[in-house]
Every structure is written in structure tokens, then in C-alpha cells.
Length: 367
Image (cartoon, rainbow, N blue to C red):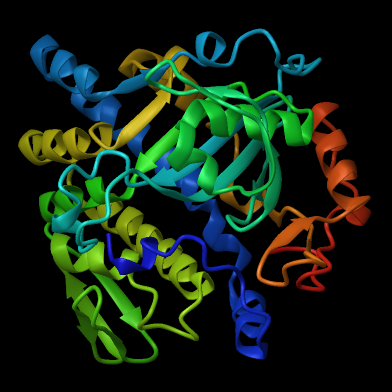
């Protein structure tokens, strides 16, 4: 991870360049989370027939969080249908030695990406709601992983919840701000992609402008490049070397990289190379933390199969409607009544109305 994540309190910049960056991001890139899950399931199924010891080894890679135990009974009711809501986080929770990720002496795990994926009844379409990391929220009282209690607080940055109290508190925060139950939770460790990229022999990316970031050491000329694991990690963590230095540019690079990664995996001869398939699946499962209900290969495979009918072309991507905070223009708050209408549609497993999609901060109806 680069220095970009050491200053997590840097809010959105209201410059024309930042707003232009928001407008320029292709909505289809947020489909990468669903594709990543399906790609993982394909790999697991390919490896599954190679022997119990391989299955057991990969199964032990997975980490699970018991949400009911961590959150308690104070949770919204489940959907009245067979629809499902999944909170997907991107983090550096398994990064280990942060110095190896380019963060210097900074310690502690961070999460800078959060999506609520809604899979409605019928499993033929999906919607992904992105929650901006700089959104000011009311954090509920949470129990930390060490058993201590973190008191509730108002007007805290959404992305600070993870670093202070862990993923279960993020789930609780999302549930209370939305009134919507999260049926599952999935956390993807960005640093795990370093080993994954090396396992598949590198990933090809194309950049329109040079990227030079002294913090990450990334130095790329405009054009097409084949990145190894170390270079790929710098690529998804760079911020100061792209755009105006805000988080918007980095988000775009992360999405671009993961799409390129999935494309590369699809090119691999998984069935013809069991050894390579195992290495890839080992890297993926080693980067994944889920709720306890999904924390096994069989559960993940079953869940993945239930999504077979969801086509990427039918996935809608939305940013939680937000407006710039009146007290602090570097922060955003949920815009009303749009946000309430959006969450209500998810709670009732209904189509999201157009009136729930427009974000005053961007002036657009989709992210």
C-alpha cells in the first residue's frame, strides 16, 4: 500500500478536476466486485477435484466473521423475499508488514472501498451501491475484536469505522444508516493481489498519461505495460501520481486493474494446469474474509452458483446520493430524501426509483 492510504482523512476536493474525474468514471467498472466473486468460484470449482488435501488447504485460508455474535440482536429484519444484500469491502487487513506495502511506519488496517450489492429475488439482475469513504455518518456503539467497547459517535468519517473497530462495526454502521440488513459480508485484501499477479505471470494495463508517484515508486510512461506483483500493488495504491491527487483517481485505477486482472485469469488454462490453478486459488482465498456463513469453499461455491443468472450487463451501479457538508466542504453527507428512497427500495426488494439516484455532490444519477 502506498502513502495514499496514510492520509485517510483527506476529503473530496471540490475542484473542477475532481468533479470531472467523477464524471469520467465508467459505471461498468464497479461490476468488478461481482466478477471477482464469480471468478473466485470458478477457480475453486476447478481446484475442487484435485484432492481433499488441496481442498482442506484452501479452505483453511478463508477467515470468517460471526456477524450475529459481533453485532448482537440489534439488527434490521431480513428481506421479505429471497433477495440478498452483501457488503463488500476492500482493505489491507492482511498486509502484515506495512513497510513492504510502501506505508512506512503507519500501522493498522484500513478500508477505502465499500459497496452494498443487492441481489433481488429471481437472481437475474443486481445493483451495486457505492458508499463514499468520506461520508459523515453516525457510528453506533460497537464491540471491538479485542472485546472492548467503542462508544457511539456522530459525524465520523465512514472509512474510519473499519480502522477503529473492524468489519463487524462497518456492517452495523451500514445497517443502522440504511435500516437494511446485510445478509453477507465479503472483504477483499488488496495486498493479496501481489501474490496473485505473480502466480498468473503478470497483468497488462494501459495508461493514457504518465504516472509518477514518489511515494509508491511507481513510474510509468503513457502506453501499455505488463506489471508484476510489486508493480501492480503500487499501481492500485498510487494516488499522488494521477489526476489532482484526490482519491477519485486511485479508485479509477483500482477498478481498471481488477478488470485487467480478471481478464488475465480468464486467459489462463486452468483445467490444463492444476498447479497454476492451485496457486491462483490459494492467493485468492488467502485474500478473502467473509461472514461465517460463507467461510468455506462449499458455501462460497453454492453462493456463486446462485448468482449464475446475474449478467454483468444487467448490473446497475449507483453511488449513495450525497451532498457536500455545510460545515466541512471536504466531507459529504447522505442527501435526503434520495438516500432514504434508495434504502427503502432495497429493504423492500424493489426497483430503485430514478428519484433516489441523483447525487447533489456530482449532479449525476449514477457514479
